Length: 200
Length: 201
Image (tube, rainbow over all chains, first blue to last red; front, side, top):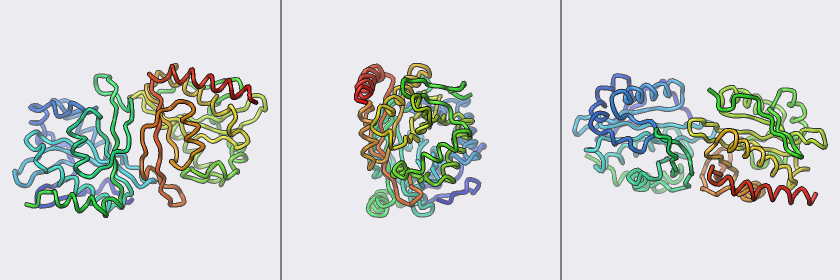
């Protein structure tokens, strides 16, 4: 896998554009942090409130600088709005795998199908440009929306990891792990996801 | 701030787990010549050069607080017979993994591994206050899976293409764990197993 953390990767189709997250995106995302704090109910590092959002962005950028994670902001071409973020993370270069996560969208954009466009772009890039062997996904086991979304994309469930993390309140979180393999992408997932994504 | 702040020495009846030191390298290079040890590993460290890289990497990870490597010292025979590590140490989630365990085949199926696990797990749950200890192995490594299941770890899933071996072969891994609420029961079971195994020898 050849990945250059310094390079500004831009992934887009007719509907969405994913570009690298920047510090100045604070103002674009702030309305969600102020008005929809429940978006991060299941997340360890949430962006609810202005202070948390600032930390969230700074942390994400630091992770990119350290070559650990690559955060994107998601732009919706139809509404002309920035609607959320997503990320490649947990790059395991020697094993040729990575994870997709830290995905959230403003409520008005949830359930609109736009997530499929984002995932199509992220998966296509990971499997076809980077050539990874596996893309992993994880979710809080109580986050039914997230689990449904992952399964609808074509992820296979692999395991339930107990006490996998602690949330901000110090509570134990069980995490469900899913994945898509390169062969599955080419055999079935790519076509099915392409059929489902919004075309125009 | 590292979770494990002080030098950790875990003393059992048969073995002592001693922090890895550069002085151990020579002995480790001798015992790891046996290729049976490496059948399921991502790296074949019967090559001393590769072993040295792996051991040096352990020091780097120890400084970062992400790993803590031990050698396994046999108290009656006065020699080093293997190595094991805490890996994937994440204090913010109070969890870690036990891995990179290799024991010379002369001591496979003895009480050694059971005692190592007993010492390591007791340290994790009773000293560190861990909430999760993970164990992971190649799905094809039946001997290792049996060993993990015997100590009472719970199977959690099969992760496909979890690793890539240096031979270019993809490795599927099985994940197991013991969590804090399992520990009491696991300790009783593991201690009994360990006692029984020792009597047989």
